[in-house]
Amino acid sequence: MILAAGRGERMKPLTDQTPKPLLTVKGIPLIEHHLNKLALAGFTHVVINVAWLGEQIIHALGDGSRFNLKIHFSDEKEALETAGGIVNALPILLPLLEQQQEFAVINADIFTDFDFSALPTNLEDKLGHLILVDNPVHNPNGDFSLKGSEMHRLKKNQFTFSGIAVYHKEMFSSLIAEKSALAPLLFEKVAQNRLSGQLHNGFWFDVGTPQRLDYLNQMEI
Image 1 (cartoon, rainbow, N blue to C red):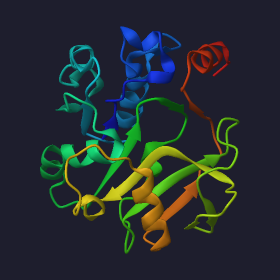
Image 2 (cartoon, one colour):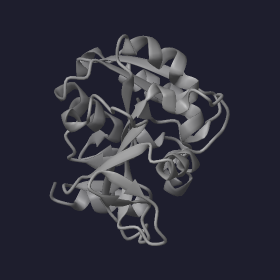
Image 3 (spheres, rainbow, N blue to C red):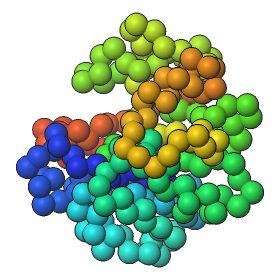
């Protein structure tokens, strides 16, 4: 699943007329970078949630055939935030899993060289597995700490959640489709020792403001 429903408030005025996932890096929309990498990694189905200017995303991506993918859209009308968006998409997502228990979730508004084929396919006794990165300037205190693959929450954490994760379907089984953030759920599951994590040492960039987007487009990547 790719999370693409947000309004992109910090990206104004760019997102007044264009949804953030369709803003371009090196001439290619952010979300298309993800779709191309997912196809290369062997994924076949992708669910994309949309809300703000969602019809533009639906029109731009179509059925996914040009990416060698089958795209399914979860139209929220009004953005439900991250956890709410995932729960709202479960009726579309779960039948696609067939015998699988886990699914990957990726934020549309990041740019990374992470290899999606490296995501785990079996979480064993965990409900989720998060990909972490070194803390960027805009998040100096981080989100989590790692000891091996064990996740912890400290006053000052070394690592930031990248927006890339694998979740067991039971992670969201007790939630309803309403506006709700993901962070409190992640912190709760870390406290219960139900999440694992790994550090990505490669390239990762949070495209959160027009200035960051300009900077990214000027980089040699």
